[in-house]
Amino acid sequence: MRIKLRMASGAAVAATMLTALFGATGSGAFAEEMIPAIIEPEQKVEFVSEPLVQPLPEKEVEEDAVETPDFAEEAPMSAASLAELVRAQPAPSELSRDLHCLAGAVYFESRGETLNGQLAVGRVIVARKKSGRFPDSYCGVVFQRSQFSFVRGNSMPSIRKGSNAWKRAVAIAQIAHSGSWTSPVEGALFFHAARVSPRWRLTRIARVDNHVFYR
Image 1 (cartoon, rainbow, N blue to C red):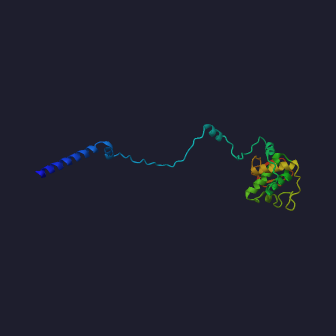
Image 2 (tube, rainbow, N blue to C red; image 1 turned 90 degrees about the vertical axis):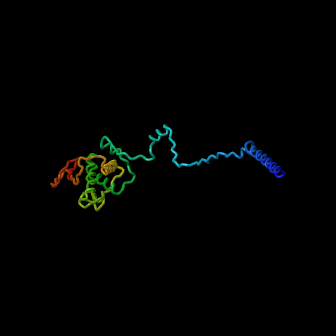
Image 3 (tube, one colour; image 1 turned 180 degrees about the vertical axis):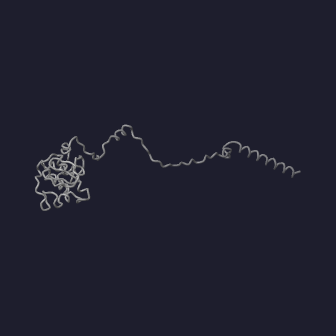
């Protein structure tokens, strides 16, 4: 009998404890601790490297479009006449030796002629230099033996470099060298004074002032 009472008493105590335990887990702070929390996954931040393009204001774009560059491309020189082109030529403080030879030939051969006559002489010297049949420099062409009567001992007579005739000869030499004005004797490689008749077996191109030109 005592054994049964003890067992019943122990069962009652156990039941009481279980009731208290389950009652506590269903409410209060402990209940909150027992509820599983929803853990959101950590957001991964990705960095993408892209060039930053900042649009310019329309006004600045328009200004850039018409902005003058630091250096201007040299435009071909044009003129209404050969005289105007001669006046437009720069006056270099110093000439290269080759250009000096070309200007010297124009000066001594044709300084008393029109600008067209002077240019014709200059263009013959330029054509000879490029032909492959004569020396490949202006000085070589001018100082070639027995070609120009003003040459004495591989040199030129003195030049009055302060004269207008020399200034025109320099300008004509620059024009002849650049080919910026077309001469009526383009392609000519030979000329002689009109006062003589050498009877060359060459193709006559034209007479300009006091010279007759051939190729």
